[in-house]
Image (cartoon, rainbow, N blue to C red):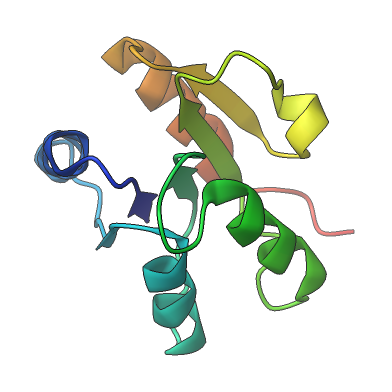
Length: 118
């Protein structure tokens, strides 16, 4: 799942990921992403912008962490915001816009690798 309010970024990321063989569900803001999750979508990972209208990335992260259905979905934040780290946000990774595609693919590989069951 890719969540970003910038239509150019959303389209570019979606097309790039689809070209690489990833299935992509694109969302324009956190509310749209939450609606998709509530409808039963089960993404392997979420690429999430922070600054968006309707429901921003911070708000969506709070909902994800509070709900056991979604708390274990790996999240990689994609943001120009320099005020936070992945540790601050409690996410798997953080890429600063603009980022390189090799960084994106490395983050996705880390997010989707099989994890040991606890």
